[in-house]
Image 1 (cartoon, rainbow, N blue to C red):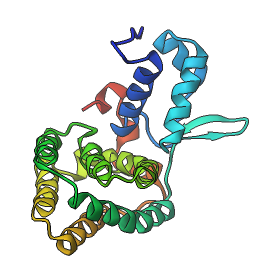
Image 2 (image 1 turned 180 degrees about the horizontal axis):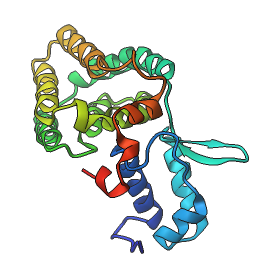
Image 3 (image 1 turned 180 degrees about the vertical axis):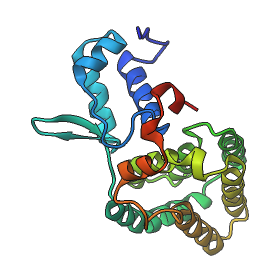
Image 4 (image 1 turned 90 degrees about the vertical axis):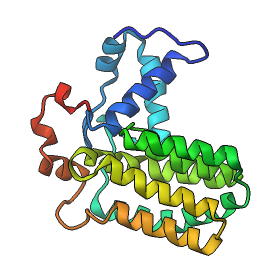
Length: 230
């Protein structure tokens, strides 16, 4: 795969986006190794470019580096996911409370478009919906914290999206969130987002040890790579 830079987009950024897409779609599953030499040959680039893309993925919490072993797709345990949910709820509630005071009609129109993308199962639409609200909060530290905390959580949800989730139902859940923001009722909106996060992970927590075991239960390891692509 020979990547040619798009206008204003570096080769490293393209590799980062492609690997991120593959992780979020379950093409690369939790615990899978990401070999620099193999990726360099695939993308027809230097290992330095691959290394930079992997550093970006690590920053976003989608891969982990293990000394003397290499880089692997993050594999959250059930406990780690539970801990992240506990931390995420108050932080995201704060972000939505701040954003509600600042969002305008253009922001709400953007959320409506993202809801339509969620209904079409576009892989980054769910994250983009939440991230837009975080940006509107106007607190860079809060945005960076939520971004790093939740990237692997969104990837985890995407693992099972085609098995346990319905695009129309997910879109409707996000439409209710957008309507809550438009209503400008701070306490009601905060309750909506807390319930939304709890509901998103309600299917999980009992029958798997980590994300890799969940993928095994869903039969994703038994599918050829080309069949994992939605």
